[in-house]
Every structure is written in C-alpha cells, then in structure tokens.
Amino acid sequence: MTDTVIEREAAGPDVAAVETTDESPGTTPGAAAGGTQERRRAAISPSRAKDFLQCPLLFRFRAIDRLPEPPSQAAVKGSLVHSVLERLFDLPASGRTEEAAQGMLDPQWQELQQDRPDVTGMFTGPDELGAWLAEARSLLSQYFRMENPRRLEPAEREMLVETELASGILLRGFVDRMDVAPTGAVRVVDYKTGRSPHPSYQDNALFQMRFYALMLWRLHGTVPARLQLVFLGDGRILTHDPSEDELVAFERDLEALWRRMAEVARSGRFPHQPSRLCAWCSFQQFCPAFGGEPPELPADGVTHLLGVQAV
Image 1 (cartoon, rainbow, N blue to C red):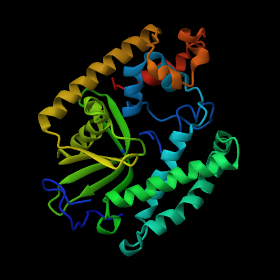
Image 2 (cartoon, rainbow, N blue to C red):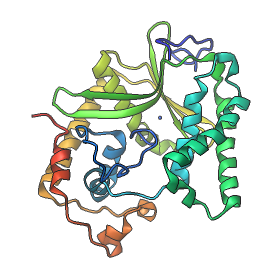
Image 3 (tube, rainbow, N blue to C red):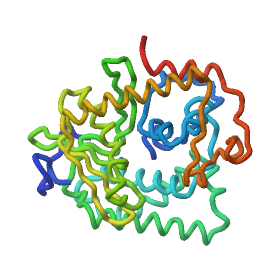
Image 4 (tube, helix red, strand yellow):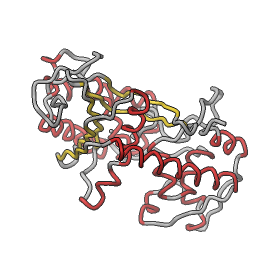
C-alpha cells in the first residue's frame, strides 16, 4: 500500500477520482464464541449499532450471547467480491484488468471454503453454486464499468479503524478503501454488492459512512472530504461530503445510543422489535415473537459489553 493515491480523473471537490460488514473481514458475529483466545475490549461498530436500532434483542444475540449464525448466500457473496477487489490492488496498475479480477474469483472462493467449511452447505447442488458464482462474476464486471482501478492507488484497503471518543466510548470498524489525493483530501469508499437504496432511505445507508468519517476525524483531525458508497448491484454511486458540524451531531447521537445500550444491558431486558426484517433473522427460535425463549443472559457478556466506555 502507498501513502497517497495518485489519481488521474476528477471526481469531486479536492478528491482524486477513483464499505460485510464492518466486523473483521471473513468473520460473522458469534464466529469466535467458545474460543480460547482472549477477547479484545468491546467497541461499538456500525453493524452492532444498527442491530440495536433495528432490534435490541438481535443486538443482544450477536454482541452479548455471540450466538453462531449460518452463512447466507448474500453475505458470503459480498465477502467473496470484497476479497477480490481488495487483492486486485496488489497487482501493478497495468495488470488490474477485469480478466485478472475474474481470474482471482475461483482461488478466493477456494480460500474462503478453507477458512469457513460451512459455506459449502449453502447450496443444494452444483447448479445452484454455479449460478451463485456467476452472480459474483457479474458484480465484478459491474465494478469495471463504474471505476478504472488502473488509475487508482488506494492509501488503505480493509483498514481497521479504532478510536476512543472524549467520552471514553470505543469505536471500531473496517474501511473497505481509503483514497488520499495529492492535496491530502481523503475519500472513504465502501463497496456494496446489493442495490442502491431509495432516496428516502439514503440517510440510513450513510450511517456506516458517517461512523467511519467520525472515527477518522477524531484520529487524524481532518474531516474526510467525501464518503462514497459503490453499489455494484445496480451500478450506482452514492456520495456525501460531510461537515464538521454534522460529525459533531453524529457523535452526540452515538453517545446517546450508547447510553441506551448500557441502560438496557444493565437491566438485562432486551426487548424484541418485530419488523419485516424478522423474516431474515437467524434467531427466530430464541425470539418471543416466534414463540421462542432467549437463553440465559451471560453475565460475563454484559460485563464485556460495558467495557465499551472507559471509566
């Protein structure tokens, strides 16, 4: 990786032309449950924050109980495409062709299966797997219609960002790509393998990007010039140029959200919040909305969660 991006196309104010989740790449919530490795300090990530806003009980299952979840075709396809796009920039600029990217897909799929043998159980047979891989190839082709990677030298890829706010709250996330212009202006880029949201839902889509912008601002003292979501599902790009005032307000919102999280965790009562998204939930067997009963709340999980805020 280089320290700056040398860009040859114009794409917005002071930015040289050019996010699985925000959890550790290649993992799912609960994947490390039961392991012997010491857990690092808990932090708020964009995914877990959105889980709590969607359904506090879902948040509990993922962040405190750390229940395992079966792999989904959509999520694993996203991980596969992300891994190819990350490794594409290991090649010299002249070699970053669509043919090269397509050639990486099968080796990356083999590697993913070695890391997570359970993914092979997602398919009923070779035909379904073949159709799924064809969809991944189509997303890679779409990427080359949206950007020219031969004209890019990202400063960072799959970058772990972690910062503690003045309030003592620890934030953590993984940034797909960060571009830095010769002027020093920063663009944060996140790839999405789904379709772009309706305009009425764009603010919700930008939650993750504002989260990253806040962390980078607090770490480096400079507000990113541009936040960019690349939706490979329909070939659209959503951009937003954040302001300092906006990030100050967002920080206050996150602090208020953490206070609600901590209050609920201390009470031990995580309410379920039924919505249309329940149809895709992996934890229906434990949810009262489906006649289930949550497992006993692990006290050590609550203690670990409360470590998000330093005292």
